[in-house]
Length: 229
Image (tube, rainbow, N blue to C red; front, side):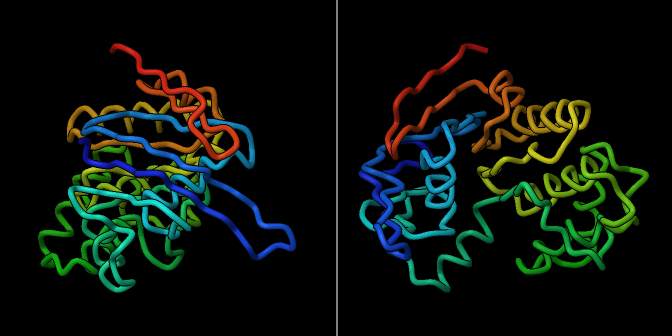
């Protein structure tokens, strides 16, 4: 088994007048150091699948296993703690804390983990340098471009030393140059740290760099292609 695997995942949203079947029985495995794009039309279930893997939503039926742990059976408090130590997230909207500097934003997750101050400061600086933001370490999000803010998000996602990172449409708000730079950084991190990256995306530029493309249609895996590096 890989570091992540799902078994017969179903998700039905019942908040609407007519129930919506977002996932219809997905079983899939992801291995260490993958660089994978989950693609499909709007409403196909790709973001729902990503949210299930990240423990941000609970399946109606089925299981999600990460590093040998069935996260679908974890109590809420345990699940929050598990995400904190095992999963990195990069979102379309950056989700940085406006009043904190780039370094402080990256440090924040390590602070929640209880990492000593000196250690988390040194790691934050190292990661920001790695994503090309040496000159923005003390800048707040409002003083950075969208591409720079998303690089901070990537550094923050890596700060907790997760085995994998989930990225939901991370390039949606970026221009072509920023997108290319961000994806190059993510590929470098993937190769350097052996971190698994799983994207939910519509972006052709992400697909071109992916080493695996999983196509979701109507809540099912319609295609699963792997490419040799």
